[in-house]
Length: 236
Image (cartoon, rainbow, N blue to C red):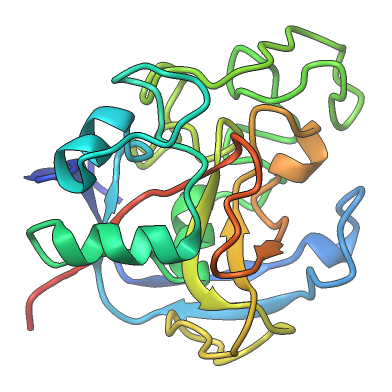
């Protein structure tokens, strides 16, 4: 695709991503794939905006008036937030913001690639913030920062999105259910636990793969590993 077009919202820069389709294919031989990473095709029916970075603590504070994060810093991603907290945030923020669907998230993370990571068959701590003592795909051990890094400080994928792998888990709108669900970009309406994607600063590289799925209950804030990235639907 051409260089993504950026816009501004009350919670940072957004990139316009195109409609398209992709295949989730980690079950076809990707090392350390989970039982719920079933190969199937997903269709993104219309273009949408997605945050260039994870929501920062400064952005969260402007909207919510508080900062629940364990690692303080205006440019660091907000963390210690539940799915319910994120729903309150998007309701208070201006500009029609929302959480991405799980399909939108993975489509954006992959940015047209089919490898375990948007940056290749493996990643290094210079590319993503994860536990460098637990590399993937034969990579050497590396730095373990044991904390979050500033939003936008590590290399972007081909669509200009930073920290899609590691740093903090990113809440999706979907309820957790077995694939393939709808097969489209529509969010699953399953009750109960909600999906998170991307892995966090304290996770192994394998958990930060594009296909890896996680889930938590709606009110769970876990530890300093749960944040968000915003999406916005284009006007009709």
